[in-house]
Image (cartoon, rainbow, N blue to C red):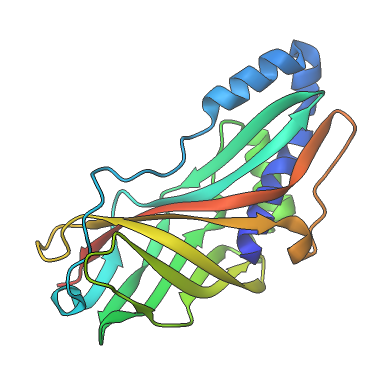
Length: 227
């Protein structure tokens, strides 16, 4: 996902902006603080529930409250490993189930609202790396029907990921929790690995901080049946 890559790059570059603080307080203390602030990977809030017959889940499901998306990237700061995560709950879109498969999916993320524990990093990510004023959203659009196999607890989603105006193909192995026949929200989580070079992005390296060449885009969606 091109946008995912840019997101991760923005975060890494943002760390350069606050690198002075790491130098002042020591890379070890800064790394500990940053790692403690990193969010856990998306997890199912309840045990995965086998998917029902696709006809039972037919219809359109809208992204609802409690959803989030963001990025995860690793950095090395003067020999100390640091993991940085950014998150936003400003996620919209819908998923349609028809003819035994997920036939449509269109998810949109507001880039300007993605936040970490550091305001300087966020400003760099938003204004410099992602140019959110010009490219305000990142999107994932399904390009192939995703068959729903009864009894499965995951579904493979293939689509176009667009970030910073660049679109790349992406495949996500999404896990599912919730009873699609109950009328209650269903949770869908997943992660998309990204390589900066695939999106013509050069991870920053200023001597005291180096961003890894790869990162990931993560999401947790609460899908509510449309009325």
